[in-house]
Image (cartoon, rainbow, N blue to C red):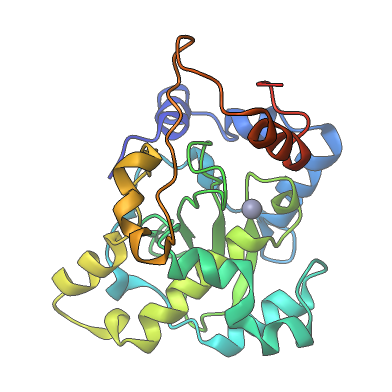
Length: 251
Ligand SMILES: [Zn+2]
């Protein structure tokens, strides 16, 4: 797996909480710590952002999380998800993250043999800003039942217990469960599926992809060179461009 600098630092310094958590406001930090308290308040689960070891890429280890588990967690947790929005869950941004390959491979951590809980973590590429740092959601799931105990994400909404990136992680697990990938003894196919996500997109000059739109064009479009020596388009073209985007730096 990719190196997790935050987790490596935690491991070396034997810290209980990651730098991410220590930099949160007092209120947000207390909320984060309280959500990881289990056993009727008697013990704390480890901070997933501080867990350096134990993460494995193997969907066959994932708990049997059903869509019902996901549904109840998302609806019962205060936030953006409602009965109505989940009835049309395929139109949700979270579902689109999975469909468009914005969800990185999911990693599983058993915490230890005695723990009734496990963690699943991933990274989700922001919807429009593909070069921005990915959000890092994790969910804590009861191993025996597949119910979601708590969750978190590094985005603003994820400071609570639910956001589109947490939901995207859960929807990706649901897709794997439905495809039977979590029940297979041979994990190579499941790991290949888990690893399938969209790599960072590279911007391409329009002139290089113009042939893709060629059939829809009625006439050739004159190209404009980006150099200072290039002649300006005629005044009518400039006026129509300005009417569309008056605040463009060009004007
Ligand atoms: Zn998020």
